[in-house]
Length: 226
Ligand code: ADP
Ligand code: ADP
Image 1 (cartoon, rainbow, N blue to C red):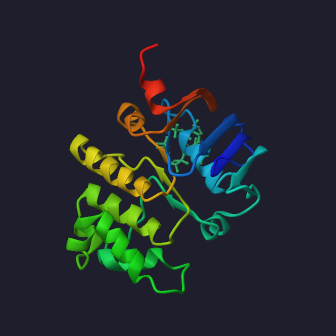
Image 2: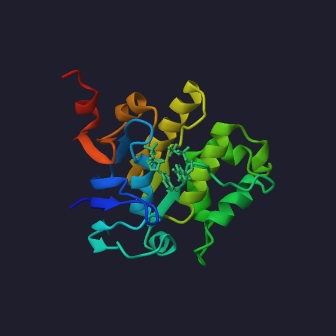
């Protein structure tokens, strides 16, 4: 029923020990799902497993009902997964607009409509479209990274710590933009260090501890004082 689910995933890096233990992460249509938990809990690892950057030793990943466990990240992008890694690798010497065009590399149709949608969601990018991306502030660069992922017209958007290293005000602004993205109907899955703020905007929250699901519930439930 979930649009994207990493189901009871167990796995680790290379031949190393298991980092994830029966970890389940899902995002439903039109919802924001957030993965939180202490440093080293396996949040990024869970995201990598869902995106195919880490092989799961048991468990599965399904996208829109289809088993994609054995597909490469590239193939997952083609199936509709948009992924914004933690250290966003935008091209600093290229303009904002050129960065967005690069995002559409898998498409051979007209991208101008999608570009206009991205500019509607991120007005600052429209204003600065002809500036080198390296001249933008940290928060604005994050918007470029998210906008670039949207240029593929993904069916689900995955973000690994989109607010890492930005000020509280910029974090609020980024979350507002992410809410806007979700309102367009796009399911969003993100890893966040800023647990409280992230759970406030989450429909579904996953608290990971030592690679296991410690708590799962709505954002409200997880924020409530038991
Ligand atoms: P979190 O995102 O919750 O901070 P991570 O998923 O980054 O946690 O890390 C979980 C565990 O996996 C940590 O023990 C970390 O050292 C280990 N780990 C992360 N990346 C790698 C890697 N590329 N190779 C080996 N171990 C890794
Ligand atoms: P996070 O904020 O997700 O915990 P880290 O700062 O721990 O990320 O890790 C940064 C990078 O180093 C990531 O690409 C991660 O995969 C890698 N890494 C983390 N721990 C290890 C490890 N024990 N061995 C190898 N690579 C690691």
